[in-house]
Image (cartoon, rainbow, N blue to C red; front, side, top):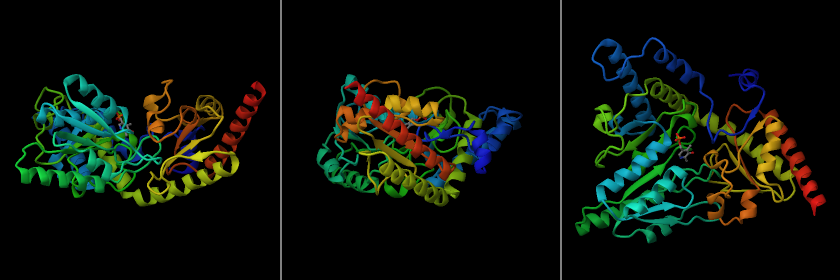
Length: 404
Ligand SMILES: *Cc1c(COP(=O)(O)O)cnc(C)c1O
């Protein structure tokens, strides 16, 4: 899409909330169209109209498996990231019936709240702390694992500050623990789950080679449609259904396939993977321009999260004295879409749990904004955002001075 076409598509707004959702990619849209129209067959039906849908679903599965470096039968379609995350926790729980669940303190609510809810069912739940950049230490994870730990869940990349976790080192920790258990003759494995919703389609992300047991992804975060996602479940992990119903997904996830959604997801991921290097380079350049611009134009602002290990499109900034709530309201009036923390906690009055876990005070957390870019953004949009934010920050700070 050309910059001009994108601008009109975007109703003239500057869209900097790609961490919340992304627009449907053109390839996804055109791949989906026949399945929204003539090809409406149920993918489980025996006649040709059904077989056409089934074939499309399996082609999408093949595309996803190819990108992740997994076997197609290890990819299970779901309704999105939240279902995948919940399912992963249930799979670990069903296998053990009780035990210790370990998760990072900065997990998305779909993992965090689900794990917390397991307490009522008798599970012990423990949070792994993160450092100031939001990173989990593999050594701390190793130290926190107990003989009865059934699940270790650490996201691949954080949805608020964009910090990328050392997943391969964490996978090595899990592998060592499982080897220890094997030698001791313990049947109970430690399962490693990663919520890769912010990573898949954005940064290189292969499940199998890393030794991950389960990986969650969601189509609408990488240019696919909303309401479609998948859970990778490594072959050998005993699968228990979350949704019990028909024989879909090898009888492990009942419910009529969301054929257009699945087709759109496959097309979007194939496109994202093919363009990944170019998109990453473009997003990094725009993001660094934004970071440099804000640092120069907004006195006292701080960039949160790791500067090295971060999603290419993520800029998360604290502007002391500038409450995010007021800044977002003014940004919206200026036609700029951004967010405080994450969309899933928008409307919540509480400051971000992620930022608090990273050591920010409640006041700092309340003055933090997330700007998530995509390759579609332009240099002009970045310049305009820097100018606008600098004005907003100065104006809010001046008002606060007057009020004092
Ligand atoms: C968006 C998001 C989810 C939830 O995905 P949905 O498809 O919207 O349910 C889960 N985890 C992370 C890290 C996310 O960013």
